[in-house]
Image (cartoon, rainbow, N blue to C red; front, side, top):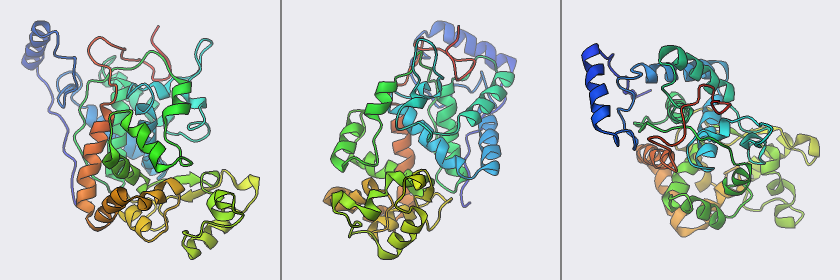
Length: 335
């Protein structure tokens, strides 16, 4: 890779720890907002531990880069970035894992569990699961060849999940650009964030059922989407034959550079070879189409803006200060 991601923190000494203690005692509001240096003293090896965990996961499964990025997205759009997506069902609460956008689809829970276990050994009861997701998604993108950005930290974990919120608030590949944009703006994001964060589809796969209607019965017409590239159409019809048992078969979101995070996703949209209808629709609006064309030409601009939009997204509804908690196990609320 032509760049490096520097955010490892120096080891602390006793004097610094004492200074931190008095600083916190004298500044009760110090922990009530996110900070790039939040764990500098309390868990100085945090970023090394997270990156090693992500590297290990990607060595076993290259798809995990996209899965960790998606996990962060699906978490932040429901209750804010509070790690609610990680919570298992209980007798009194239905978790978000069983919601339609997540069921048999969202992955990476074991990766977060492993990183959390390592952090509990290094700095017990210190790092939130929400911060782990934020860092892991950044490292996943970087290790897949994408940009690196500094992640503000200090999130705390939520106390409950919101299955209905997951069903209602997470954008769907079946929705119109207008509806997707509305869901983004409801979270404090804007149309530029829609285009930029859609670039996360540079990596990863989609199940056939999410785009099969484009192959055989576009808009109930009984024919394929006429805007779909002919060679791509033929290839996808072989991958996803018009039978129910192919619904969960996977196809790459970017068949050109499938496991590399780059701007080819935008080049695909310009050439009419976007996989999901919701992606290709970005070319049907003058404002979003202009941004797509720009990012297709200027990869470094896309990288810069992607990092900025990820930081913006990671701030949605973040719990800080005394709100929420630091879960010891990311799957359950502390007793």
